[in-house]
Structure formats: structure tokens, C-alpha cells
Image (cartoon, rainbow, N blue to C red):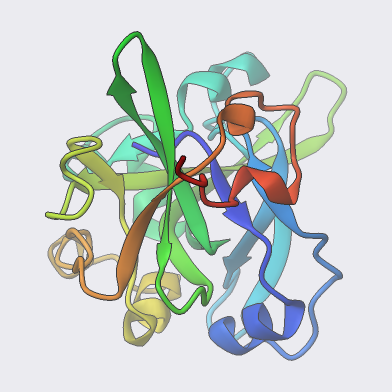
Length: 225
């Protein structure tokens, strides 16, 4: 699963990854938590360029009666998104890339849980596979929300958790974002565990446990001794 992640990379690195010329300024985020707004890349119509927008984390289906349903829909199992009522419409035509440079997982250590920051060894940004939807509140305001797809864990992450977010290869971005692509078989082929090579799991401070704490010390490696 993925319940907390980071996006603290320089804006130019994010722009280069997603091939977007102009980005809104992205303040560094060291502890993105559910219900918060964060960077998501979409292609809204065929032949339109990619755009980066700030969406609320926790997908709220267009037919939902209450915004709070999104609190339980921060992740979606990739194996079932083509059939689940809450996700199947978005899976067909409202897919997105979630900008990130690492995510957190917790491992039980005695009576406590030790957080780990999982990231690329070169510290470059990457992308989760996501789905988005648009919900209208009772006052008529439109709210765009998203969820992160998960899959089984690779060898590196398995000791921490049996699930991990789907990390897409850059060469697959265009296919995933294409609003005209609705072949579930081809899309499902992308939703597999990312290779362990080039990634690392780093034990970090428990300050990350608080969703209101968003500072650089969330990802600083623990010093032994």
C-alpha cells in the first residue's frame, strides 16, 4: 500500500521527467498525507499536452454522496480496478501519473513500528500509476481527486509490506496517459512490481508518523549508535 509519500525534488527535475515545459511552483513535500492536495499529471483530451495539476489525495467517485468516502480510497488494488464500480470508469479513461520521489512503509520493531523511506538510489523523481475522478459537492464546486494503484511487492519491499505502489517506467507514461487507450489487457500489463534494482529502503525518524509534520527531517537517515 502507500499511505504517505514525498515530492521534494527540484521543479526542473519534475518538469524533465514528465516532459512539461511550464510547471506551477511546487513547494517541497516531505510527508504528503491523504486528503491533501499534491501534484498529478494528466492528459485531459486527445492530442492535448500533458498538464500538472494539484489534486486531492483520496478518490471520490463522481456518483458519491459525500467527500469523506475518499478517506478510504487513497489506494486501489490494480488487480481489480477494471471491475470495481468506484474505479472502472476512471481506469478506462481517467488515468494519471502521481509525481513522487519516495514513499514510506513501516516495519514492526518490538512494540513500535520503524518507518522506512523507499526511494531511488540516485534520488531522482518517478511516478506512481494513478486514477482520478471529478466530484461535485452540494454547492456545485468541482473537486478533482485521485488514488494510487498498488500491486504485490518486489523483493526489496517485501520484508516491509506485501503491497507496494505501482511505479511506471518512463517509456510507458504516454500509453498510460492516453485518454483513447481503453484496452484493459494492455493497461494491466503495466501494473506490475517495479524492479528492486536502483531502489533503496532507508530507516528514518518517527517524526513522519505525524501527518501534520512536513519537514526535511522526515527523510533523514537514522544515525546508528
